Length: 126
Image (tube, rainbow, N blue to C red):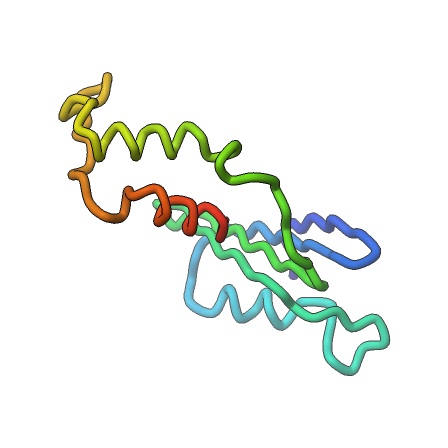
């Protein structure tokens, strides 16, 4: 039984969201068994992504099932969209920021992870 579901549908993509009370063993498997598409269905769409979430107190689970071909996502130039991240990484490597942020949280230690090429390679995967 589906307690709550939300369906977002396009010609090439369908997203189903299930919200259920609790996080007991077997709950995700039960949701999977209730999914509408099988390989034998005339309207078959491949399952391309599953996102599983549960409340910290185990009171609720939220699972998102994405069907269809999502295709390649293009969001533009990562130099532009990630400019604030690249600037922070540069300042961190140069040592031009303090050891803590404005809330007293420590900044990470400088490392090769924060080199511009590595940050850009990571952002291109997002």
